[in-house]
Image 1 (cartoon, helix red, strand yellow):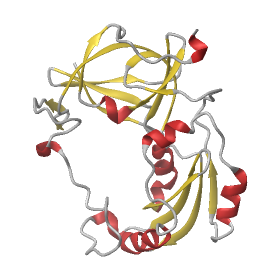
Image 2 (cartoon, rainbow, N blue to C red):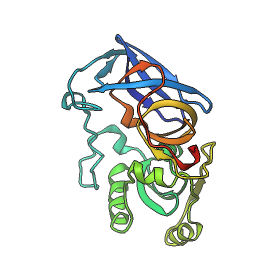
Image 3 (cartoon, rainbow, N blue to C red):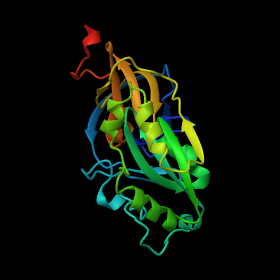
Image 4 (cartoon, helix red, strand yellow):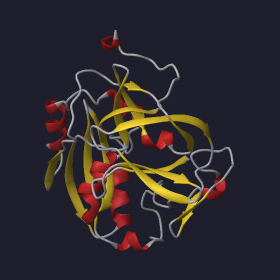
Length: 250
């Protein structure tokens, strides 16, 4: 068995995607689910074609060079020929807040705005511009990114999972823009203290926020980057490896 992907919702329930001898199945990550897997070696997650998984033994994980898709929009700042169909759709420019006070600018196709924000695990967000295509959106994003970040790393998101957004700082930022719509997300769980960042597939699922999975195991709460699990071989049975414990576990 190998973890070859994950789903983050909201359009589909959060889950791990597991391949076994070419066949795919999902491991639900609904709150209360008991995970009991041990992680083995990690290597390329391969590729899925027409519903069949094709394994790859290359050591590079989560994907080797042969199985890495380059998304042309990832580094685009609007100086492009709009090479993909999605570029020609209406786009939204947004601000997203990650507790307590990390604010980023981003763009997405207008019809995907709510979904995109939830995929990122944003705590708050504001739709600030609607433009006719992706090239214009990227130019607007690049302009705003001169003073706001345009990406937030998962460790930063994990560090704020137990905290709320700095209301004063967020409200002050919004006064600088003509806000079209605001969002306030609830992922169905709350934490009293910062979870421990760890890579494991054992424990009771507390919930997911974007691609961060929160589990309780051996008296401690852990935050797992789902992308960090992709490529690992799995064995049935809870992990026996030593993991850092929180003070509340004693």
